[in-house]
Image 1: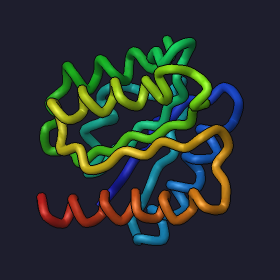
Image 2 (image 1 turned 180 degrees about the horizontal axis):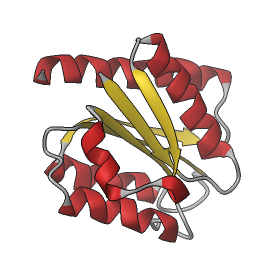
Image 3 (image 1 turned 90 degrees about the vertical axis):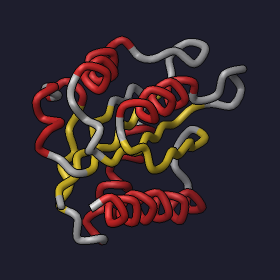
Image 4 (image 1 turned 120 degrees about the vertical axis):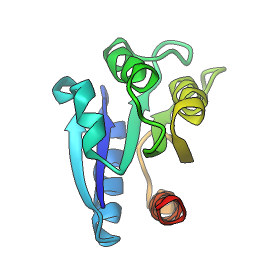
Length: 147
């Protein structure tokens, strides 16, 4: 079983969350690659059983420009066999909190085996660690059902 975490971050909040999720996936004995979006290549998707996407939201809940290639790759590649999750950080001050997470969630639901989503307010805190563990538990259990 092999997993990838494809992520982008501006403030460091989402990259911190990606690192926490990577550690939790490794605790599940799932070999996990942490892939910054600038190293992403669409054909890489076919190398993984699980792919999670980590993103911040731009402006009022928009998808960051650097994540558009990832979004389009899931729409264009044959990925219906991949178990996916999406996570992100945001500020609930904005009317559309973590809107990019919702955009990915809706698209992944159509094109993949979407298992779970996770939204974290700003910087991950100690209370978010349990939520990250549950995120990874859900991915691992969903993959077991599909396999």
